[in-house]
Length: 99
Length: 490
Image (cartoon, rainbow over all chains, first blue to last red; front, side, top):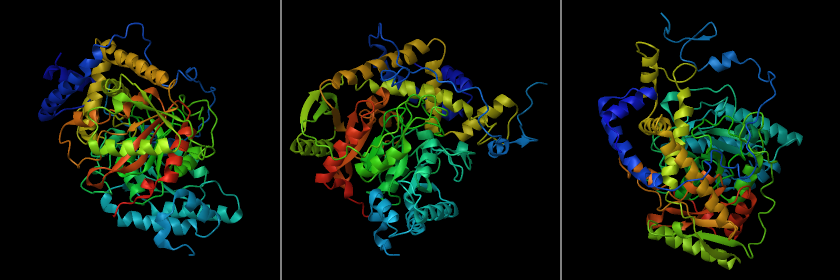
């Protein structure tokens, strides 16, 4: 298996990262080198093994913990928007999406 | 001032806390002293943000509490935080241009708990961008220099934390460890660092990299100091972190002096094979001899999938990162590109400008292994082997109480030494990745010097929730050796 520049473009699009031509070429080489190391992993027999998503589920049952459905946070709109790039009247501004 | 200020930076955290408690020195004096020191050693690149007014206000409040007798266990002690922890009163960048100038509306739980215990914040410490790196060269704000040799890396990603503690710019610092980011820089800078069991310390307010691996911990000058800090910062945070363990906070200092008589130390064959540099091996062997003298027994064990932990980790961590970092879209916080044609173009340009090379690489890897048609072959396969690695440890712990070996195959390498080869960095993580994947606590303990007088760290790995035992094992060694007190000539 080897990634081509077409694959790199597709991944960059999915990841929403714009790439300059030289960056794309470099990434293609680096990612292929990386997946060369990954090959050894694909050959491991994992039949019947349950994937481990949470490292301590051997310790205690890890169920998704839910909070009570009550408002616990104070209104922090101003503080939350302090570092936003574009804000108007308490709203986040983005380029027009629907014509 | 009754305490000679020349000596303040030589006091351990425990000694400093005692000096403050007995009013031999004030918190304002201590904070002022360390702020000056941070300024004098700015060339190391350890600090990303200092706010002397904020620090001194916290110190004044600590002094008031010390006077009134309502003080916490860390009252007035200055600490510095890795820039991965969000802070209300300091800028938080996570070492990324994406978050340049970012002000969080809240403090991370770890930061809040340490403040609750009385600690004073000196500032924020440099790290690899979003904690992705092993040499601190991936910070958008420049690399950190190793205080033992400023042409070398301090390690990463908590490189600023390790350098600051080694250079005595702070008595201790927080760090985070996803694949070795506390243990490896601790080893490279000759400080004592511990990553507790996954879920022990809250992840709330830690800028997320790989959520099933990220864990907060501390870097200090001794196991005793680590125990003091860790006791204050761990404990459940059920309302804020859905993966924090439902295990009560613990005083990790209680067992520090327990005897090591009969302790079984497992030596994984895979940690002592080819690939470990001779100078590292010599220091590790000497440390293990010390342990035998302390009554411990060395037991050969095997962690057969050690090498596999590299691809497994570098599939799982980037997969989680690609998801976590999707939040950086130039809308709610952080950088936004100046020119763009539409929403998609804004995302692509913002992320192209805001992220550094390594972060882009990992997002691309993560995007690939999670994409349709590749998920089973890469991501799921990695998670299955992750279970096998975790099971290997449980097998090993039937034969031993703790596991010991090198933290890294070599001492700190030269800045730029791995050139433009990210794979070289990944491969050097081989001994720290297994414990991370299994969610186990791990430490680095200074055990001497290798080539060019660069520090070597011994890695200690314990089973889940055995931090107190690990700290005890480290502490007893530090009672009979003085490697941890060695200090670079900066």
